[in-house]
Length: 302
Image 1 (spheres, one colour):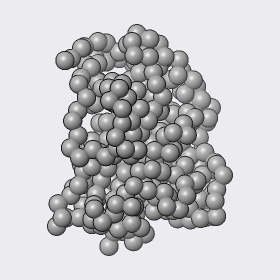
Image 2: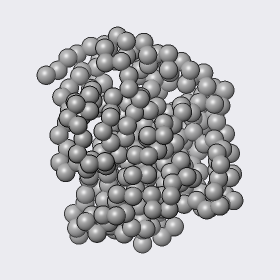
Image 3: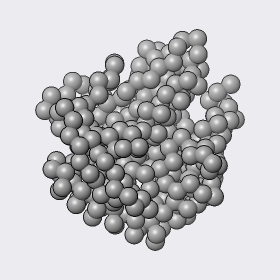
């Protein structure tokens, strides 16, 4: 069953660009069926599963909000193509919803084709009003604060503890089941987009050893300084200098990371926020291949 409505530009700002000006058509859809989906905390209550609201925004892909049940959605390569490493994809969405387009399905399929055992992490997000009019109003208020914060260098939405717990649980699960997925337990990484990038950084900085990723990719996530442990896994970071949400926050975390581990930063001249796997003709379209070269440099790939 489908229901079509019109969503105002401020919600588009969360998903595509904080500068979006045009209304976008939204179509609510039935929840997709994912083969071999993994429930991180065991079989859920059906009521919690049914709470999810899935929809498509014209020209921008698929989204889900009101996620209460965290899962891993597998994208597994053929055995002959597998490289022995795993990547957890953490979509963005300001912890209000998930953007399952370029920073979700497309990313997972691309990494799968490169030989990675890839898993989209559908982590828990903030619960938003189910009524669409109330939802739009709620998003307007949230995004007005985020955009104002981005311009002043203080964008980051508070990362919920439960989202961080889900990222940690995902790494731990794959490490404990490494042989099942034909991966090495010391080659498990998180590639996060926007809010998902904040989760990846938090995992690298604070997760217990058994739940900490072996490498992370922060893709247009804010790079603000936090408490740094003595050792952190290698980090690859990519963002656009004209990103009004994350690009004005400075690079304190990069400078701190230099003192404790391996870090590589790609700051592209143009491209804005939410460029996913890259938008030609912008040079941010190069980041996936640059990331692959980086993984070879740190010996994740041979």
